[in-house]
Image 1 (cartoon, one colour):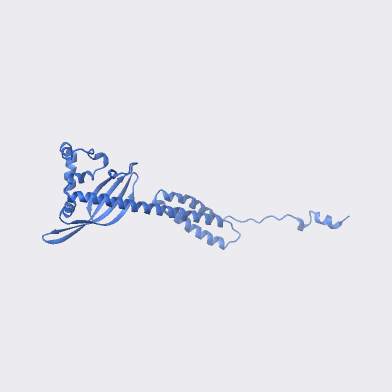
Image 2 (cartoon, rainbow, N blue to C red):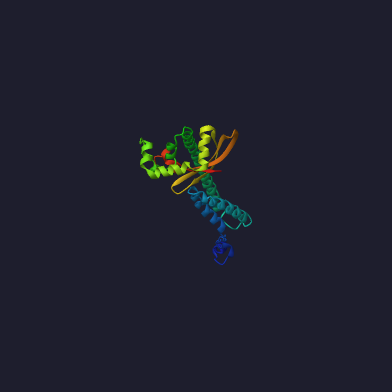
Length: 240
């Protein structure tokens, strides 16, 4: 009998025992990075959640550093995936919000310039219509003189709106001088509306001397499927 063959099959021989894979610990911070990377999609819904992808990238960098000093631990792939997802969703959210703000600022400026042109032409009742929400305005084609004569509340709001000192100065500058656009100060996304604050400078003369008044004009846009100019309204005019 071949003793060499018997020796190879001997279960007592330590060299013939199957190899048992060594345990490799899981790096939990890498798993948290992956979870945060997936949750970074929430950044698309609100700028308040932009912190999620930032946390994912920071935690991922810490995880990779720890994994580099502990080769036996696993989780590098999870950390990298979480970081890639965080960068992807974070960049997407920032780009979408920035593009939207640029568009809102441009449309709000066009609407405000039309409103100021009405002030320049002393068409104050028409200008006041752009101050109200869509549901508060006179029906298209309705004579505004008749509307304000029959609607006491509308007439009272008209007198109060144009009775403010700041707006009176803007009306005077639009008529006698210039009301120039300066910049978009901020855009705000509200639950049912978008808000835009524009800075304008009213230039006029008083007692032969040039005067300037910086004002903040706040506009709101009611979201609707039509997406027309009637969705916009001038909410307030305040000294800057």
